[in-house]
Image 1 (cartoon, one colour):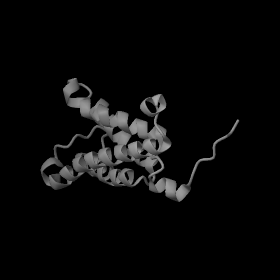
Image 2 (cartoon, rainbow, N blue to C red):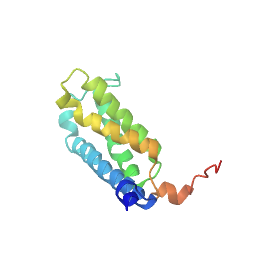
Image 3 (cartoon, one colour):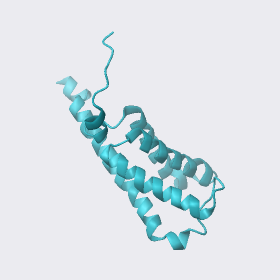
Image 4 (spheres, rainbow, N blue to C red):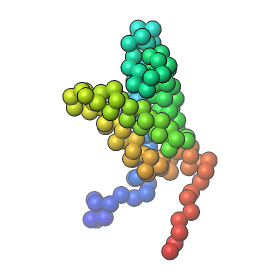
Length: 141
């Protein structure tokens, strides 16, 4: 009984990772779609922390927030997708909002922490990565 309360089964972990991927993928995709809808309005004033130009910075943010979020939801190329998303949130947290109060940059920190967890754990059993690439062999020693 104690194990059921304090420990998780592999199946529960897989469902938890699926829920995490889908939820945060959808949340971030909405950020990107809002940028798509307001592209002409926000493109000239969009932050350019890497010196690429305002419009190109916006296009890169949209591509990452929408494209990588779709991959994250599907669990396809998950670790590569979360690297892109984590980089975007790193830039938002430390470059764009670095001098802002915590309240302004807190959401970027939450996303960054979540993407770090997914990068470490991988997508879980319920993912296209798992279906396409199978199980990782573990060393019994």
